[in-house]
Length: 165
Image (tube, rainbow, N blue to C red):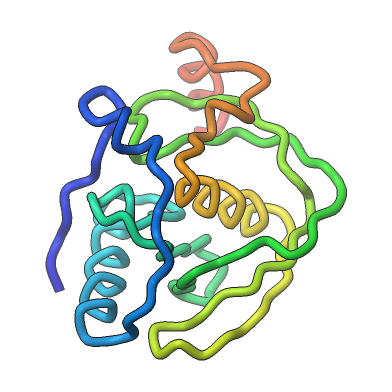
């Protein structure tokens, strides 16, 4: 496994706006990419990471919400159902230091493939629903800023951090 560089919007905003191509080969290169993405995600203390964020225009995502289920690997993911609405604070490894309040579905159903090409589905609420939407958006060149109803100021962030201590 190896750490990958995370593409940031300040340098590569045009790249992050691209649409990713489906994964067609389920081979050792895909497995290595997913392993590297998981390592990179953990090193960056993130919740999710899409392949485009490490410079690869393929529909692959890793998510780890810290819920004890470990890293979820999603290849060619699609949201098949969504319902409800939730507001949450959202950030992005590709937009360091920026946080916003977003509106997302409170419940989603996702269909994806694993690293071997086997199709599976899961349902998600709360943070996993937000992370699933956020990362799948990345695959279509959409950043969380599109869903932000308010971007937090540095003062608001500092106030929130001090209230958590």
